[in-house]
Length: 229
Image 1 (cartoon, one colour):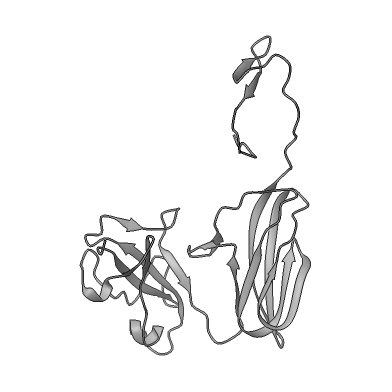
Image 2 (cartoon, rainbow, N blue to C red):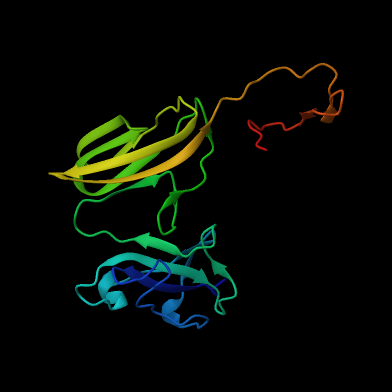
């Protein structure tokens, strides 16, 4: 398959919203060779930005580039790869000051980055890796408590155990001198399931209790660890 093209531009400090792309390179539903993505196999596609972002898009000096905005589409634009929520995809652009971001877990390329869905329960571990754009003091926090730190590094990792149910907040700090930059995300941790024997006399499916005001649902799901409803 070669019918994959990009629609690409930038969000700058002069953009009025996250849909106000500036300096878009190509016209929608056209097929210039310069807009064509290269297949890497396994349904992965690559599009290089050469000679620096400012030069590539022709952004004037003094205008701050905040994000690269992009979509993948077929030649006619009838088929478009977007985020799961239907929004455009964005790549954040950092300046030369200290910055930090998570690489694990994976994040969706929404305007404000959010992690891919995370399904955890009490007692599980979560793998974390964050990177910085320069050597710094890096710290990882779980619900405000420091769980890992390192000095003069550009990456930090941890695999904490999740001990409490409810909303969780993970944060990374990267500090150089008096400047600290952070990234954080939230997710939900479910309580550990209550494992108990089946009530006497029930069978697979819906079992109506006397009075028809409640039911016992028996679901056969080998290999599964959790059911949500």
